[in-house]
Length: 552
Image (cartoon, rainbow, N blue to C red):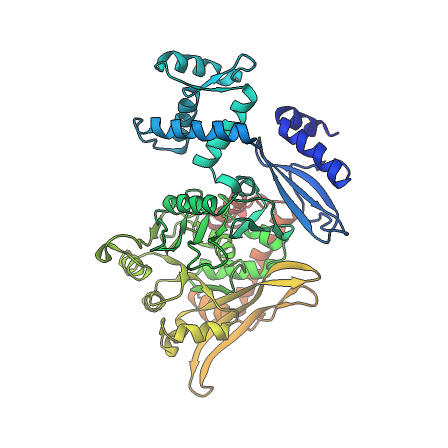
């Protein structure tokens, strides 16, 4: 057995029990202990234990015979007796917490829970509190008045402490998958149908459960209160951001959701995906990224358009590193998702609760942003009348970046010019570029690809519509991106080269290929961390090629 695996089992006896039971019941070999996963893993034959923070582990198991990968969360389990003690202790903690000051941070809340737990239990003769907790425990025992306490062994204490923290601070029954760094999306319909979208294994059904309808409803009410939009039978739908930045949409009550209350949660990384990672994954080419660099450096308005889960926000966040570090950026969103790295960033969020006169929608936020003279305005998603305000902002010289739901540039224009957005078709050319993204199924794998980058020239009466020009196109047969706009780019030549005062407009392509070389060099050197990539881009802004950590 791998030495790290042995150490993990010694620290977490429930892991050893799980592995032994699994090998006996499945007749399978011992799982491989891996602290990180690779996209090159064999997706048909996998048997891996992944640590996601003691005492929680993930087990991924699949064989050609099974035809799918199964996903198991491993965490300390409570038996019937321990469950009774857990609920008794939880009631005591909640009662005592009423007389405690309100914690101002998660760390303070965790400390308070530990204090209240230790004052509510009595470690039996056969157990003791771990060394790190012993002094705190003994002091608290002396300070607290004598009262009836719940007797626990050391093993019970460890389990119950985990479950109390999991259910009050953490994510309850879905805590194992929330900790998984390869998680993208969670969907649940009813009590047992909990599915995830995994960065390597795509869509997988988990073995996790909320127990019963009451357990699910309690969890949904708790999550809705965390986002400040409580659900009830009267108000069954809620959408918002959790404290960790994850976005959750809740549909509560079987009156609305006939197969049981449901939710969808999108998990966002604290550190955005970098443009080099997206290049490595094949989402776009170095030349496409360099083109976006040129456009964002020179104040072009860009929409990132595509269907649901096509990678729009991920691409937007990665490309924000190309915006001048000295730019003044305003963002307006329903849910906080964009993460500009610029120091001068004003983050505006809608307020949907409260009396009608106190509510603030995206339309109002955009109007406020326009008065603040920003260098860039970012709209999390355009879907209504705020789109008209965004185009007015473009007309007055404020570049706008936004995500949009449309699978092609023609459909995007149709939506923009129709109700409820109603942008006059003659105004469409205020938008310079549309990047079309999609989740594609290729050779048995789901991939996210930038299908095209299209430039918007404008409305022409003679053609009866808006003229666009595809400068990059994804070729599905080869999974490559073709640069169709070489020496034929309207934006590069007629907008950016003219702005920069180039006598020979085609010299602008040398600037593009220089940036492509910089990105390719980062890729070849394995520089892909978001902040490492950002530092190189910022130094290039400041010092040109002399600011690069390598020769070009």
